[in-house]
Length: 66
Image (cartoon, rainbow, N blue to C red; front, side, top):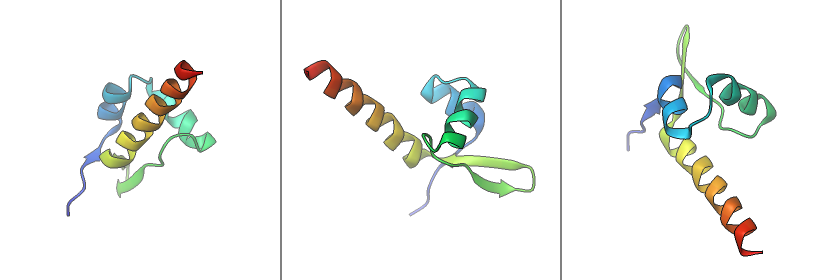
């Protein structure tokens, strides 16, 4: 099964996070790590970004229910 790669512009668009925040969160281990797809280019797996989004929604919902 093929996976979809998202470049940084798409990651910014789908998450709403600024580019600098994406990289900062990667550095803290709080956002999926990018994959090198070329000498000077990286991308994220769409499925990993989607899982990150689902986890943020679950955190929100757990907080709301308390």
